[in-house]
Amino acid sequence: MQELLGRIAKLDPEASLGLRVIACFDELMAGEVNSHALASAAAALAGCPAGFRSGDGSRQLRVDSGGVSIPGDRPAEVAALSLPNDSEVWLEREDAALPNDELILERFGLAIGVRFGLERQQLETPRDVALALDPAATPEDRSAAAVRLGLMPGSGYRVLAAPLFAVFEKRPAGPTDVITSEHGTLQVVIVTDDTEDIAVTPAGLGPSGSIGELPRSLRAAVVALRLSRPPEEGLVRAENFGGLVELLAESSDTTDPDAALIDEIMDSPWAESTVRVLLEAPTIRQAARDLGLHHSTVQSRAEQIERCLGYDPLSGYNRTRLGISVLRWRLRNSRVLELPGPVG
Image (cartoon, rainbow, N blue to C red):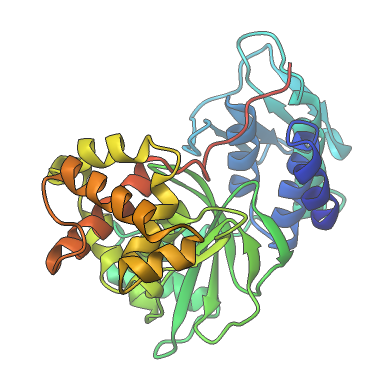
């Protein structure tokens, strides 16, 4: 499914939306996430609350599109799908159904059926992944959750963060869940620090740390994910940016006096590629060779950037200043966590 999805997405992004829904639930089932994660995914994909009820009434779950649990019984009028043993899943859409609602319900119901083994009524598992990653939880609670997940104190782990519609060519082993962030709904996987051959796009991989540092790794992974530019940069490793990831995670545009100027520069069609090469190349001549342009053309662009910014972007700490502003610009303009709209 993931291989087919990748091929079709290149040909027709709109036509691939249904397959992306299918692939999303396939990956969540492969990751053996719990019902809250499945309901969160359904709600995020549909853009409205979603829910599940077991046939004997012992288990009911409702979550909004942000993944937050909703108390109380479901409304009387919902788009519902009946499952074996009188269980059901539903979407609580107030307006008319959207084109992908039926498919989301079908895959949500299938995933719930597999997760619970409805014929066997398996018990639900706690949300230990979310707890182990929660910076608001106490260190003791986070450590206890990590140990229940099979993570070992003294060993190193990283957090992999990806959107619901990420394409997994190979799913890494490790505890998985669906969580919400201020930037959108995420699939997260906790992997060992020596995990190799991670093939997923787009995604961000946090730095290695102990089980007590998992929230920090998650925060860095989200920044790295938002810096990804698929297909050129599908998987971004936070450690490649060193301490800049922490700086970016803690700062905001209000602390960047150059934000408006960078936005103005990046409006030019040549700006992003030119700025990137100027930051990487030791000289303008080398930058021109890397871009395949004449030296005078790149020199002219560098001078235009300098006039706009009011400082020489290639001199001393100004190069770092420009680099940080460009990374902030990339975060402001990141689209990797945006869910595509329904095809109507």
